[in-house]
Length: 202
Image (cartoon, rainbow, N blue to C red):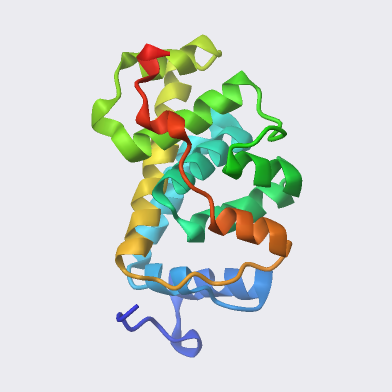
């Protein structure tokens, strides 16, 4: 990462809050936090967007959309960070998360969960190829119009954030609180084959 980021000792305002959050949580300031600190207004706007999305779909669905998009993009930053957030929120245990990102049995997903995860992956790899059939799958498992839009926004927001970090070549830091096995699974996750197929074709 060639950009020069704000120093911890001179950070003020929202940047200081960003750094303090990392330090309070893990004792370090992550490289991705430093990168986003160069435009704190954009970071605040991103946080506001997420706060506007989560209430209608709930944290579990938001994290599934986030993890699905992050896996499709190959975003180690976001897979590690949101893998841990999901663990700490009690949404999944380590075995379930590893199974989820490896596309193995045992992920504990019901049909609605799987629909969200695969919708987010498809959006992240072939958004231009999506049709009403993709949204219909979400409707068929019980999501409302507002929720379908918010699942879409959650996945699209993750594309914005993850791709920005990748484009800036932001280093991927170790995330405390993950076992070596889960950390490896999250780092090595690859997209689900369903992202390449036309959902309308089955």
